[in-house]
Length: 316
Image (cartoon, rainbow, N blue to C red):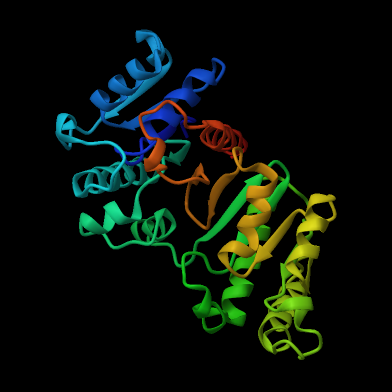
């Protein structure tokens, strides 16, 4: 399989084009990169950043020519931008499934723009799951050797307890273990599973989910040979992972895991999707409409997303 890394440009009105350009110019030679997006937007962004015309040296651009760049206003959600960014993702998925890409890196998109364009997905993860036809995907965030997988992601906090189940927690543990062994080449990885309630429920005083749902899922995973432990209070689990006592943490809801990730690497975190038939990474930030076009966007997260995609692709 080719090791060409595909990169979708993201929403044309956000910082996606900027962080993609900054990243590809910071990478050393040896990377094979294909940017899927709008050539005119990329050229305009490169000019605004003061990049030399040869910024594309070693970088291919696949221009889908799917909107009029002259009518695209920065710093606001736009239905045309939502449609275009959605089509970039679909093209990347298509190429990855055909084996034309070694991995796919996706630039930040606007959920509001997606919805304005008639595509009511909560985010990339849900698009990827549906379009690849896999039964289950898991979002993992990575900062160096600190890794967090999520049982639920883009849902209101008040709905989390009702969405948790023994099956979902077990699936997340299994996919996390599979990724750690097959992609990261960690033998017998140690996985900590977070509790939902304060102090892991304090023996039922603060909630019953630990005993009724979480512990049974952990027990089944252990019986299947997975080296997982818990339920562990989220703050303790994060500390153990930071100290190298765990290779990954399974968080039950979005902020339970993202706070630790953003604290450790706000500008260097990477989103990795588990359960897909190909490697997909992305930066952990959004479109940042407020600073789009101002040259202020930090490329660190996108840069690390490309590096991780290339590293995992080379291990396959």
